Image (cartoon, rainbow, N blue to C red; front, top):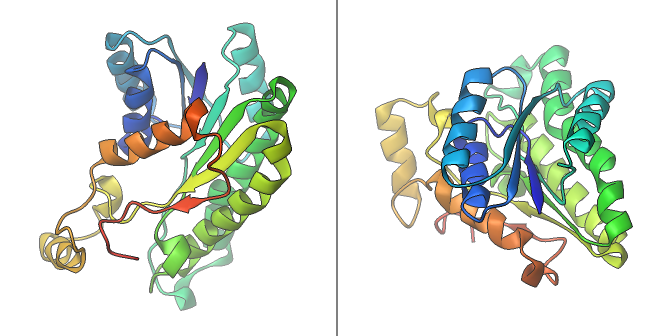
Length: 242
């Protein structure tokens, strides 16, 4: 089995790569610019005994993704599982969002997911087995003040997940989304220590999630025995949103 993790060089993506590597799966780590981080994650996966490739592409470009698929085909690494993890955040009031901001975040978070899914799902349909797992956010479920743009993309991802799950179910391909709450990654670096403490106090379990906890859920959804779970938005958020 082969898994492709977009944005797999660090954070949640790297944790997902290591989780699959621990099960001796073939790992494809996609990145755009973080070459050194991707190589570091690849080395940690190889130490776990996995066969690993790193690939670079701008997921906003169909042409680049098609070239990436050709490279994977040459190496016998066409994915059975696609984890759409690549994404960018945006923090700021809607009144200050420019059209460039809007187009950029929409293009990475939604168009990138669409293109990756569309390009790699034919193989899954042909073999009547596959897993598409989208890494969303709690903000796609509840919305967040000063994160309207980001929340909108994740809400769109959730709708995409539900609709595509119905479309692909007869083909043996499941589509689910994991929508984490606050996770201890660089995406929280825009908060200072006091803000992080205040945020943790709002979470019933009293702490941020660790990337490995999100990775475990993604792995579970990829298993053959998870075949009856599809079209679901599962939110590991420590009881923050119930």
